[in-house]
Length: 464
Image (cartoon, rainbow, N blue to C red; front, side):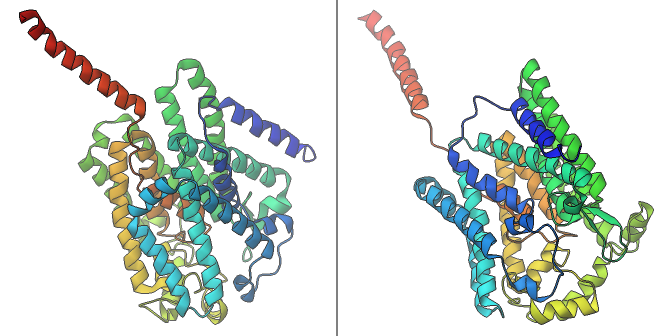
């Protein structure tokens, strides 16, 4: 079976995409650019795909990048910028309304000036800007909702089945082993089980959203056909989450599924007060469970989880001691380089992230960076609520992704470039202006006004 697995899974992917296709949905060819971008950041860089056996990890290699990957990222970014250049009016409207995001990105770029690795910091910042460029390409599509659905469908229907194939039939690529205990870790198309869990979480949210929308809006035959395709991929998502054993992603997926189901079927849950209370309960409940000792630790132990969050609490204490610039940080995405990384490896574990997104921002951008992140979180939450009330379809998905990012970053670091979680965070908080009225609508309004004027003149004509 292993010999024919690529053919079988390839046909299965094509069949699933055919089942859920929407012939009426029209998108531009430009959508392939963010699609390729997401396929890469959701799996592995091209250099990692070409190098089957992983090299020995060293502290110095994190500062070096692959020329091949740099060329690919650069080509995609140039293509994205060229597309946006043809959509200047829509892009300028979006940029004018998203000042907090631009200020945060600007500060990230400025921080490379005081970094010990200025050039590395600048290169990573350009990729962060590239994430926003790809988000803008999607949001400036003529039919934004269809574009988002196609992106989610293609990414999930490609990467999730391939992950299963690699885990089952190509373990040299889809399975790795824990360096301390030697236990197998299923990584699929990713490079770590937690990254596979993140992919399943994000794609699972999107597929579940499309399942609910299909059930509500499609006619019977189309409903059954599309739900069979979405249901198959949703089943793959759950299987991969269970196999990978990523506790953070699994718990987030469960909570977000319940929240999405609640706001879909219940009018009460969509009321602003009730909605805010539900979101607050999810975030606050997660914080208390993770950090509210001793009750939180007892709760984690009761469900079979390590009260230290698999050594994370020890890591956080070490990192706070090593942080050298609490105001400005070490510079964008350069804390985990050089002597600091070696010191962490000696004092804690062989890691290259803080396993907490908020702490990660503090280490790289300091207290100023944390305040700017808080600014885009606050403004982003307001934007998400406005979109939820204004746009019931996409607004619901934006809300789910926003809450997912808040909770996920409590135990994982995802506020960084070339990270799918950061990509969907930008997609959720970016304000998109309401499109102007179409000419046909304006013409219909004028015709209605003329008919009203004629009806008003008829009594006067009769009197004459």
